[in-house]
Amino acid sequence: MTALPRQPGFSPPIPTAAPDRPRTVALDVMGGDRAPAVALRAAAAISRDTDIALLLVGDAARLEAEFARLAPDPERIRWLHAPDAVAMGESPREAVARSSSSLALAAEAVAEGRADALVSAGNTGALLLHSARAIPRLPGVRRAALAAVYPTLPRPHNPDPFALLLDVGANLQCTAADLLQFAAMGAAYAARISKVAQPSVGLLNIGEESGKGDPLLREAHAALASAPGIAFHGNVEGRGVPLGAVDVVVCPGVMGNVVLKLLESMGEVLLAMGDAVYRERLRWRAGRFLLRDGVARVSNLLDYASYGGAPILGFERIVIKAHGRSGERALENAIKVAAKAVRDDVCGAIAAQLRGL
Image (cartoon, rainbow, N blue to C red; front, top):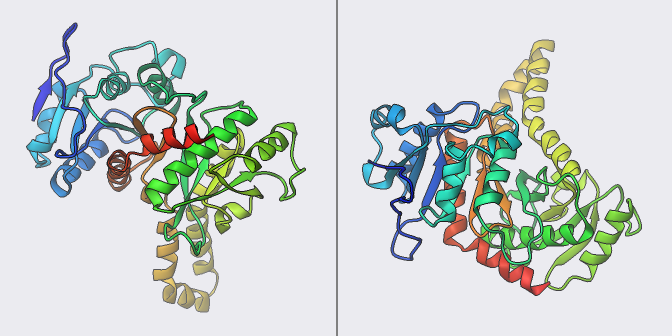
C-alpha cells in the first residue's frame, strides 16, 4: 500500500479510467457515524473479493497500520493522506472552507482523474458542496440531484427490485425545468444500472390527474408530458411509490426526503410489529416462528444497507452518498455500485439524455 504524499503543486496521479484496468473508487474513510472502522473493513473486503481499485482518503499516518491488519490486497489499495475530517453534525458551509478534509481531498482527486468515482457515508451537505466545488457539472445541468433507490413490489418489465426517487434533499427549491432534468438524469441512470431500455417516469403529486398540485407541479407535468425521450406515465401518488408504479419518481427535494425517510423506517416497523405479536399470544408466537424466514427476507429488502447508496446525479463523475449509519455490507455495496456506474458510463448516458431534451 502506498501513501500518496500531499505537497504544494504535486499530486501523484492514479491513471485515468481505461478499458484494460479496474475502475478506481475514492473512499472517504473518515465519513459516517461508524468511521473509520467500518470503512476500513469494507475496503479490505472489496480489495480481496473484487477487481475494484481503491483510493482511501483519510488519516493515513494513523490508520494505515491498522488497515494492514485486516489483510487487504495491497495491489488494489492506495492512500491519500487527509489530516482533517468533516463531522456529521458540522455546518456544510463551514466544512466546505476546509481544503484538507478527507471529503475535500477525495472530491479533488476524483475531479483530477486520480479516481473515477467518489463514495462517502459522511455529511451529506458537505459532500454536495465539496463535489459541486471540485467536479464540473455535465453540460446544461443547473442543479445536481440526490437520488435514492428504494424497494418496490415487482414490476413486470423490470427485474430490478429497486426503483429511483429524486430529488431527496439536495435542492429545497427547484423549477419545472429542474424537475425535467431530474427526470432525464434519473431515467438515464436507471437504464444503465437496471438494464431497462426505457424506464417509466412519474411525478410525485397529491393526485393522479394532470391538474393536481401547486403551480410548480402542474408546470412540471406539462413539461414532462411533452419531453422527447422520456417515458412519462403521469402523476404518482405516495402509495404508488413502494407499489412500483414507475421506475423513476421525480419530485422536489423536500417531498423526496420525507418519502425516503418514511420508506427507510419500514423495515424497523415490520420487525417491531413482529416482536409485539410474539409477546401477545402463544399461537402468534408459533406463527411468527413459522414465518421467520419470510419476515427476515422482507426486512432485508427494506434495509438501506442493501441499496448501495444514493447517487448524486449531474456531475461529470460518479458520486455516491452512503447512509451515515452504513455498516460494512452497505459500504461494500456502495463501492460496487459506483464502480458499475463508471463501467457502464452512466455520466455519458445522462449527458446524451440531456442533449435529447
